[in-house]
Image 1 (cartoon, rainbow, N blue to C red):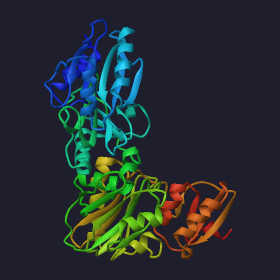
Image 2: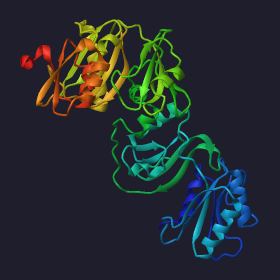
Image 3: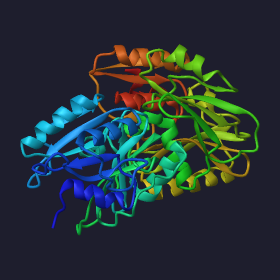
Image 4: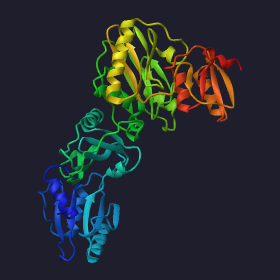
Length: 458
């Protein structure tokens, strides 16, 4: 048996917060009200008449705006849908017309999906969500997909509260969360629809970039995943364009900080990373004035760096661990070659790599070792195509030689100007885990390290 859509809302409102609404049925005279949830009134309060019900709903709405959704019991999918009505007279006129045509109608408060929150679905042990959309976002590409406990913990870290949702079991729960209190209970979580199910539980597909990782920034998302999985992440505060500042991670024992730009998607070495505090607003204005590339700025506790480096998974599924003594920014920018490191440090990094790989599969990360433990300062999921002196496999009609001494930005400009059939030979000592190598892999440009390639003299 399936309930009429407004009756289902009434049932859901008994256990959680729903958007404020009043429902109406046709052929019931001047007072067609069926169910209601309006803040400050008892559940299913009956107002004096239909118009007053709409006036009270509109006055109670956070944005002073309501929607009208019409349907029939045989087809709960919407017929006419009127969004963002701010006039009670207009809403009342529309309501009376729809009722006269035999339609059932739900009037509900307008909820802005572009308020910095997210909407999504919980089904079994999977939660999927995205910003700037309704729960239907899960039917499109790009929604974040995580195990439910991990996803709820991540949302708690970002928004400062754990979403107030019921245990969906094998069922399917549509929800949204919002920075501003909404709904008839005036909380930050709305539940929209629940369907029972006996189907086998879904499986999460934890990958990024996704729409939510772009929302808060690629580095921030990867670090939050590392933190939620129990890996050691320095205390990090995220100053975001779209949500209020939030923090996660552990104290490092240092009173210094690194300021790190956090692009929507990884762009190796392109934007500022600097030791010390920089004004994040000046940084955003200077490096991304249009607001299209950088989602946030990170203020991250410094680590007393004895050794630093990066780890990747090569094309054969094996780890490549590289690093240098001290801080690793020069190494990552190709200004310093990999150095021999103590076995104890390599063992600690290898153990961290295995821990991350068991939970995520192939991974890439940047690390800092303080002499006793490993800290993760950047994490990405997925392997690479690199092996030995081959950074990116593939053949080319000709090869362009690039001197490492020219710098990362010059390489970036070269890659954008070269025809698609031209490969790159890198002349100079760089690590397979450096931003140089990462940029070539991201651009999927056939590339070799020339100094280690006998064919480079051709």
